[in-house]
Image 1 (tube, rainbow, N blue to C red):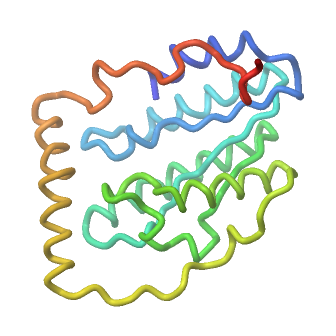
Image 2 (tube, helix red, strand yellow; image 1 turned 90 degrees about the vertical axis):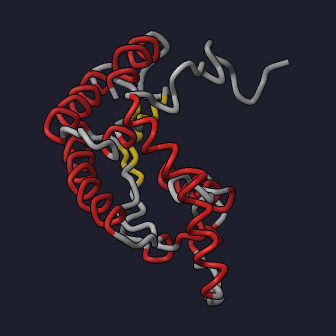
Length: 205
């Protein structure tokens, strides 16, 4: 969250030309899933950043985090509790500054872990497509209404396969995450931005 606020927000502000400029702001989710998460401090930083962005006169689009992803277990319970509080703060500051808020938490069909990648954390291609259509809809642009159609009922996964997938996930994602926390490292360390300088999209020939 601090990196986004300190490094990215000041640069974004230099490109704003009024309400025709759309700023999408989504930060703080990674902070919320860490062991030392300070909800009060993070929420205060987030809301202040949104207030600063709103002063620019740009159109602001905020995103909540899906509280119920269809995952189970103690970790999912902590996830739900933390993001319920964080999302409440997003909605509050969004209403305060007149921002658009993309919020899928009232859509029951999204509570399906088949929209998640194998890491059980990020969206897969289908999940991203549905979010993209939801964003177009909330912005008032043409969108494909099929994004609201639930997936067909899931077939029951054989017990042995389910255990195998769980063990594989633990060794590929959970254990490395725990090890990084012990070492005080992050998966984002030493990574650079995909687009370190602003680009035009679609690309201009």
